[in-house]
Length: 365
Image 1: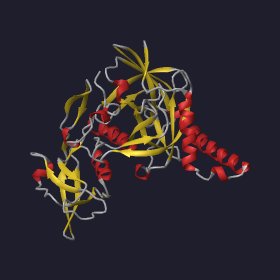
Image 2: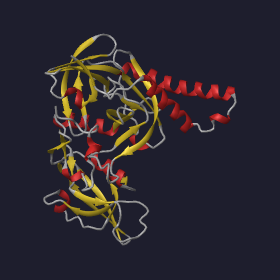
Image 3: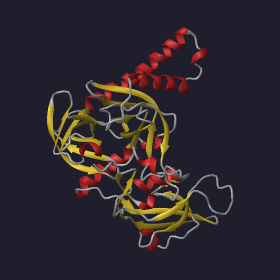
Image 4: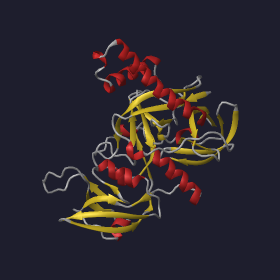
């Protein structure tokens, strides 16, 4: 039996979202002349074609065989050594994996299945085109993006949309790492597809969907680089943990204009060992400016265990810099809606809604 990962939907759904994107991005289209409208669509088509042509030879179809049958999805080469990135859900429990980049199926070796990030890596024949990691710092709501993936029974194909939001660190959707919400449908076979910027560089990887597949959810591209470099250096992925509890307001009833404040530390954590004091504003993490909770979550999500971390703390007009060494992230397993997930308790606030994790966490089969 063959299974496809990706919340499926009819083709008209993709068309609906593309039309909606056009309206949102180009609100003055209705006032444009016929020639102007034609030029606009030509520009959009040219933009998508440019990105697609650059990426398609690096995108591969991934097929994994497990005890339940065959799972199909998408992956993409991230270096010249034959390393392919895809979604961890495709690889968990796989007995045999193969990839097809257009020249036929070849066997692949699973080297990483990281349930925490939702990413997986396989190694296949060296050579071939590969995608480069884009500048993740430029991801903004409204930014146009292209997904290139393998829809079931079709060739590699593009989907066009915009960044509809960035999930993570807003209290309710406080995931273990930021996720990019994209305004295009995720069809069967497209899980593991790269999300590309205008230069054709990857800025994310599709790991799930919301709204029955109507909105794609992607892990940020910098997480791919973290997983890859961790494997190269240590032969495994070790996620870092600081153990600092934070809040998005100072607690003094003032207009804080954004920011993140220390709310305490976890017993036995690196934050407690250095005496991190409650009430101080976190200005920077490893040089990254922290203007809000999503900035903080994103900055700490790429920290590796054993890494020296620099925190810049502000209080009463003074700035202090402290150094602490990240520990290994405490892992645990919990069941939400009869499904078991690998999570860390420290990332979830008391008001976290269980249903928000269903499509985003690595499901234990």
